[in-house]
Image (cartoon, rainbow, N blue to C red; front, side, top):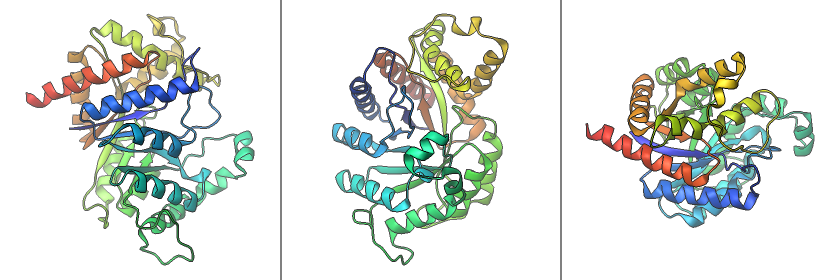
Length: 330
């Protein structure tokens, strides 16, 4: 089993943007040291608790601090941009860090009227052109279609294109275009099994990929005990609740026994997300990852999970990889 890391570049309460970027660098260096396959950051906008809005700039910062791990977007929301701009940005990254760049693409605009005005985009209309924009972006990088303009940097860049998704739409498009597929089960597990089945069934080989390749994201918090890990996870649980109730903010301090005081609907929401989670001591995490890998047949697990203390996330990653190695040894 291959493991990778998705980082939201969280900004914690009483923390700064500079501290968030520094913490992401340290996490990426730890992921590289532990043998993880790739390190991704996600594009979010106008959220004070997430600092990855300028994803390509963040990736350049991380690339300079690492040397072998693949780095990329998990993902770039293509409706927010033009294919040409993204070809230039990731062509630049490929020139700076050859053979290390992934470009994960998502369709969800994830934006209200204010952000649409700020980006000068009709994002809902732009999302309708997502399939065509993906094909155009691939052509700008590969030159497999004759276009009236050339991206420099961009043309000839050896960037691995990924399709991201949490619905059947992304699975269907990834299969049609012969792209690797990453499913966001860590926050939207509802269509996980159906999407993976559709992708594998309908996959059409491409020059980039001969057979289906699946990565699935799950939340993982490992500590010395189950209770400690559950407390560690409470910062992200608070973030999930805040987002679903329309009050997102900075990442909060962990709260012991957090879920016990929640109203039933919010507890149910977190329990539902728990089907794509591993929280506990190493033996607990190992069993949960094993069950999730068996369920999905994933080629790769993407480890997610923001913690208030950046060092705690690094320790969680160390314990997770150690537990996974023990699983492989057995």
